[in-house]
Amino acid sequence: MRHLRQMCALFALLFVACAYVYAQAVTGTVLGTVTDSSGAVVPNAKVTLTEVQTGIARTGQTNESGNYTFSNLPEGNYSVTVEAPGFKKVTKENNRVEVNSNVRIDAVLQPGQISESVVVTAEAPQLQTDRADTGRSIDSMNVASLPVLVSNRNFQALLALVPGTSPPTEEHSQFFNASDSLQTQVNGAPRVANNYQIEGIDDNERTGLLQVLIPPLEAIQTVDVSTSDQSVDLGRGAGAVTDVILKSGTNQFHGSAYEFVQNNDWDARNFFQPTVGAVHYNYFGGTIGGPIKKNKLFFFADYLRSEDHEAIATTETIPSTLSRTGNLSEALSGSSPAYVYDPATGNPTTGVGRTPFPNNVIPTSRLNPIALKILALVPAPNQPFNTAAPSNNYYATLPFTKDTDFTDGKIDYTINDKDHLSGRWFSKRRFSVPPAVMPTAVSRVLAFRRLTVAASTGPTFSRPTC
Image 1 (cartoon, rainbow, N blue to C red):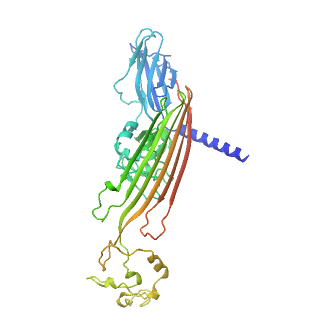
Image 2: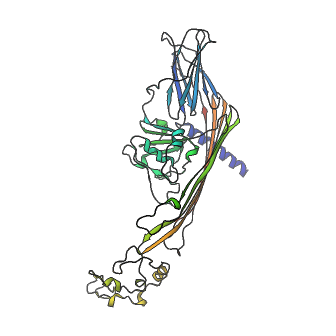
Image 3: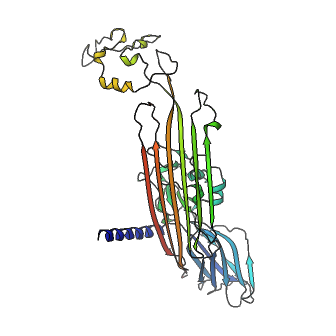
């Protein structure tokens, strides 16, 4: 009975996810008007829309106004074929449909036999008149080709290509920003006003400050950024709404393997530091996608591992060896001596009349034993310094480890020409050991794990009533 309740809860969760994802603008729309050579509309013309890579076809008819609409379309390259009795068949190819977009494909039918056909392979792009939002869609070619000058190859760095955005920056600590997410401001709005999604799934921390999952560039099909006048189904987003669309499988098997390396042998020494800190950074993984059943069922999956092992060079200021015993006589040298006063002397309320310790030496009996134990963990200075004003007297290369495993996958199933089911999962595990300035101190070991599962479904064709 307990297992039955768990299964019911899981199915309920998936249906909630389906309803939620379906409401998001993670698909595109193709619409158009069919007319004859005189400009009169052609009702009841048969319209066939085919996705070239998967071979999935959808059919519909124009209404009495000659209009047709195909909504909830996965991103892809489509061809449109229009047929009507007494007219030549018209096919328009190479129509790119992106997420959160309306693509208008009008057709003009010429009188003739239906066995005759007119094929249009390219047309001048039309002015966007079917929606008012602004932004930019960064496709897979740009995602793969443009240099991403951040160590973790974060797609958020590409937002700098969108008009109105500020240069992306990395915020917060390694512990709080476990995903190494980047932040940007859009049109002057604060960064918390932005909304990030992965195929319509919320990808924001509860605080709204950071993002949870950062898919590898090799798994991304499109990064769609809407900066103003967004559609209401995008939800929260006083700034920009960024939606990441993952790649899907096609009728052909495709795969890739990659690795990016950074090593200290290729790095220059910092001018203010005596040596180069060790850096061993490896970013590697692979992708695979293809058909499970051609024209019907497809899969895509990828794996990424990053290994960041460094010895971070740092310069610190720490107490001198003599001062740790309570002997602060070094502070008396120089033109501006600093005296240490005995708090047990003078007026206990106002401090008036207090006298300094003789020769600035605090008696050992007056030293806190806990403070002495902490000081015992602090290494001795290893750099020359001014005893009167110690500064930058300790240099070290601190070991730092951050290993990340990221896996995601996607299944697309076309049930029929009106229904499409899509499921996806994401898994991320991170192990991190932050650097400790004091090598004898205990470092924190940070582990981060995240698993996200979502599904979406819905009709893929609708016929307008006007």
